[in-house]
Length: 60
Image (tube, rainbow, N blue to C red; front, side):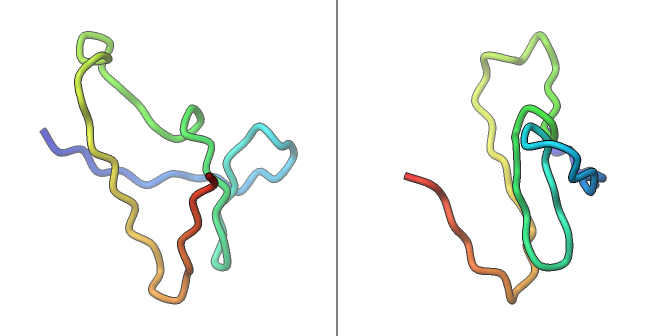
């Protein structure tokens, strides 16, 4: 199953929200990702299509 969707994450009113704009992204998975309850324990692959000029960073 492949699911593609766009999200709006431009609130900027709190540290517990995801924020995306043209220069950077702060991603809180619990605010952006969805799941089917019956498949919650199944493995999944998440892919982000980022602008080419962005550098990727993953905290340790």
